Length: 122
Length: 107
Image (cartoon, rainbow over all chains, first blue to last red):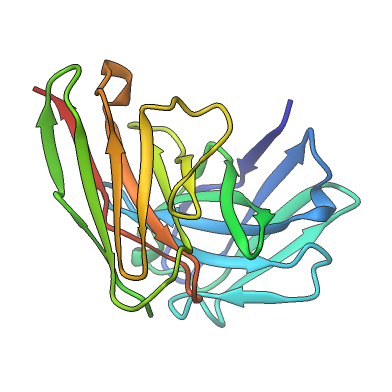
């Protein structure tokens, strides 16, 4: 079955760290750019970060730059998000999503994980 | 950053009604726009890519149109299972940005 399964969420104090994982199965993980998207409780979707299929190139939203690190292990078919110096405003469901190429610069998030909740609170 | 707006923010409609949601970008994004459906407690699900292309397996009552800065999303005949929040998303420029969502419920 083609799927993404996140794990690693939980309750953490402000200033703390957490590492999220996203296990991919049913497709050739190493062919795809992968992204993290988050959603604060009752709010909309916000793009967080992306990583190229070979892991060489990464990009971050300004709100997490310098605090979050995206990485991947293609041998383990797993995407990661290391989150340091967490703030209350980082509280959200974090989704990993596959970025699929269709044609002529056309892309979309065509596969999403179920999400993992991160709560930053003292 | 490119700002995305959607209207309405919420609407109520009856089974069989035609539903239209509009999405506007703060600058020209060509056709680099996707539409997602999100049901409560679930992950988003891709419906439309490249403004007007129906994702495989998505019912044909869903459609999209537009280019540049103005886009529309339609449900030709609302079904009970379409109760959800719908988001547009641009990918012309990083950071990729989503609209604030349009919540559709049943009258």
